[in-house]
Length: 367
Ligand code: UD1
Image 1 (cartoon, helix red, strand yellow):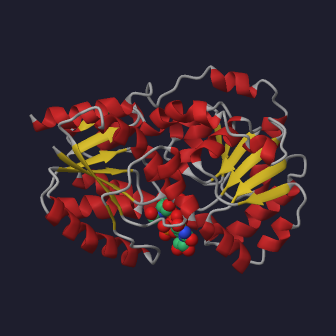
Image 2 (cartoon, protein in one colour):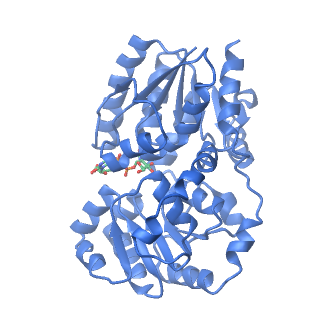
């Protein structure tokens, strides 16, 4: 079976790694790994291939950065040529990036079956490019792998046929379980001169925060005011550019409790998250990783697609409001029991075998 897997952005490589590993157990599968080139810096792409022991992609379309339409359109043109020449029997797309929608839409137009991994996640905020991408991808797909029951319910509420939906669990959780032993061998906490549970991890890259100078200023103000904690800030290339343009980069660099570092690899990021007092982020994936590692999370957004984590009080939504950010951080710092409470929560994201279920179902559908 020729299975084409389309990746392009950092989180998709993580979501795909356990699936790629699973395909290797099935001789009947010919994996066609396609990288759109959406992410191209070593720290945004290749480092994950290296750490996760992934094969080089069959093709790299080297599309690179651009406006949404330019990027998605160019990916589609190149993906169409790739699909026509490699003739996949099914096209699998993980996540919600521009590479996801480009893969799904191109395959659907060629009448190839589409499998969506991480299907049914919804923030119900159509201003987010990811919400547009995941909704449209779900409606192009005939195999919808929902990471949680909640995600599956979102799909049925949109009228998608039940026989296309499978609650598989979350492949990011599979990846985390597979890589935690390697993560614990990194010495990132020591390397950054940090003490376990005495620092926070900050990540930012969502357009609603970084492309909006007013929100970016509010978040910067909030973290500058959080002097009680060292804040480690692995900075996405886009965020670095925007901070510089808003004259905030030098301000943050000059703040003694804030450590700006280059984007980190998967293992170092897991280890840093595991030992943090809290995570402040606008990333979707990091909200889940914090949950699995029992680290309290403050989400710098108004909405989240992982509402389960908020309902279980493991995640607090603050948007970019400095008062809410401060209140949430103090609440976490004043609660010494919080980590132990989080460790007792039910995990709605499966049992670490999502990839097995996904590949088994893909093979079953073929016969
Ligand atoms: C993309 C995804 C987002 C995901 C994120 C993970 C979309 C719409 N967004 O956002 O869902 O959470 O990846 O990081 O697909 N850049 C570099 N080097 C790189 C990649 C990007 O310098 O390797 C810079 C470029 O200036 C680029 C900007 O970052 O214009 C934004 O990159 P882009 O791929 O458009 O979106 P992300 O913000 O990374």
